[in-house]
Every structure is written in C-alpha cells, then in structure tokens.
Length: 262
Image (tube, rainbow, N blue to C red; front, top):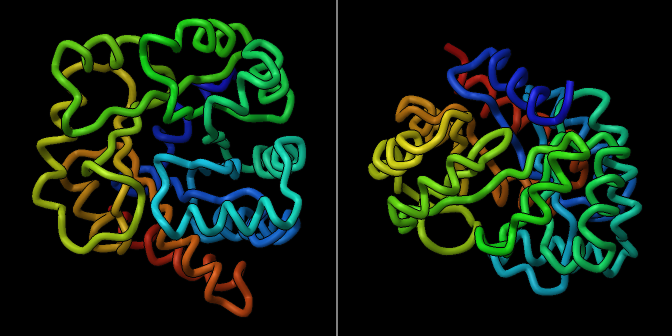
C-alpha cells in the first residue's frame, strides 16, 4: 500500500468512534526517549502518529510544543535522526510527518519526499505551505507514494476549501479553532460546524485537531462527526512533566483511546 492507502486503512480499522492520532515531538527530550514515547503511544491505542520535526520558528505551534522543539534542537535533533524514529514507528502504525516548509525546500522537494517515503512515512503535513505554492510538493509526494495532508481552519472560505478538499490526500487536518496549538477548555460547541464545513468539500477522512486536551473533548469531537482526533500539547506536556515519560503517555493515550471506544 502507498501512504494514502495505509492511512485510509488505519482510519477504517480504528476500533473507536474515530481514529486516534497523537502528536509526537521527534527528539524530545532526546531522540531515544522520543522513540520510546512513540512506542508507548501505539501500546496505549494510537491508530496513527503525527511525528513533528523541531524547527526554530514553528509558527503553528503553541508554547508547549514550541518549548519541546527547542529542547529537541538543543539535544541535537536532526531531520535524519527523526526519520530514524519514523522508520521504527512506521513498522507498527502509519506515521505522518509534520514539519515546516524550509526543511523541505533545503533538501529539494523531490529528494525530501523520496527520503520520507524511504523512512516509512505515510504522509507529510506542512502547515506553512500555502495552497498556491503546494503544487510541486504535491506532485513529488504523489510520485513517492506519500499523502500530502492539507490543513483547513474555521475561517477557510468555501471556494478555497473546495480546492483544498479536492486535492487532499490521506485526510484533511481540520483546525478546531483559530490560533496555534495548545490545550483549551471547552470549545466543543463548534466542532460539528467546522467538521461539516470541511466534509462538504472532500472525500477523504476529516481529522480534528488543535485544542483537544481531554478524553471528554476527544469523544465530543468523534460524536460531532470527526473521523480522526489529533491530540498534541496535552501529551507533550505529560511527557515533559513525568519522571517516566513513556509510562505517563501510555496511560494518557489509553484514556483517550478508551473514551473513543464505541
């Protein structure tokens, strides 16, 4: 299977109301521990993993993930090292790599897409790559068997959303709120509207992220119609605060997974 097919299969096989996709900051707090955290995600019930590559100017990330990325960079994290993490984890679940456009452009879009595919990635998320500048990377990902996953926001206009949804591969990452990543209380009242807004314009699964920080919110997202639920800052914070990060996140991912069981 290529990346898009593997992602589709993971969504279809998810035992809960929605597929659970935890975010992992590659290299945080160091490369070996981040790999152990990733394995703990799978052991806890993750259906897919979003693997972040730390970057010096992560414009989509809130303070928790930004801080984790800074720690990872100081610990010596590199793209190649995180591709190594990807290779290990992708043997268990589909891995979608989230990174910023400069890291792709520095190596060249075709070379980067090939390397990501060779590392076992199923897809890429590039939040600072606008629709108008994505054609070359989309073609490179298609050629390499990767899904280029787009993001849409509650503020995305209908006509733009129609183009994005029609070109989406794997799933559409639907941002639940305006702003950066981070834990938020409440906010679930708008889930159904933003999910429906996206679903009208695409045939691939719709995954909801940004601000989902409790099992209750994950369940609310699934009941509002999300095919997938993405949890990031809450898990990164748990890893940062724990004496045993893999054990802490395994327990927390398990709570999210249990909340989504039908």
